[in-house]
Image (cartoon, rainbow, N blue to C red; front, side, top):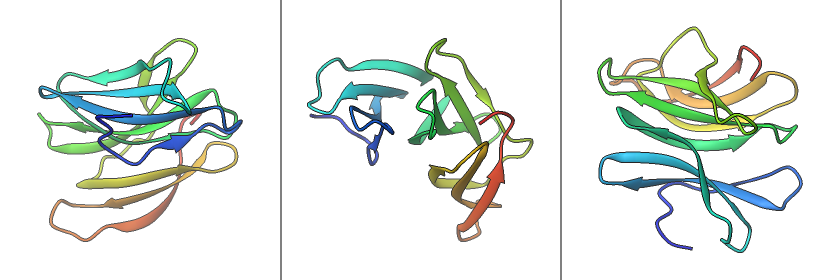
Amino acid sequence: LEQIDCRPDFSPDGKQMTFVRYIQNHSAVIVAALDGTGQHPVGSADAGALVSPAWTLDGKRLLVGRLDWKRDAWEVCAIDLRTGTMRAILDRTFGGLLDLAALAGDAFLLVAADQPEQRPQVWLARGHRA
């Protein structure tokens, strides 16, 4: 498997993986079988970057960090795997975002910096139907 631009995450049933792929200033969240077959994009960002996709525990959504280049701010989004819809799930942004991990319910952990010049911290957050 080539062109993986972040650490992969694995579906709760262990049958699929997800990762980010960057191609010419465009980033996409890709889902594939564990052997790399069946690769398909499930979300993309034309005006920003995507990082650290993470499966929710029910396997129905992916959490992902999205950089809005115009605002120079990171937000946490959820991608509905049935519809392909990506939407922000927190009412705040961050100066930097390194990693995400889904927890039970609508909770998740993120490694993020409040402001760009600050060092990252571990945050426990609850999203709007993460």
